[in-house]
Length: 56
Image (tube, rainbow, N blue to C red; front, side, top):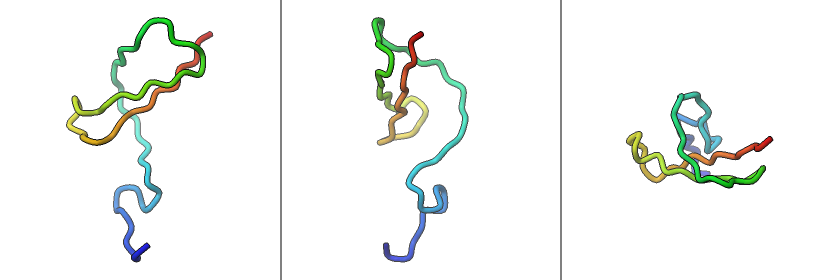
């Protein structure tokens, strides 16, 4: 693909890191449901955090 790789993701297209945060979510979620949250409040635009819920 043009010989260029992203220096942050090393060409993988994703980044993995840990950052503690509180997530508000709607009541009544079912097991396996996913919620997509924008990261604008953290200064990250055009990216979303996808949270997959496990309800026991």
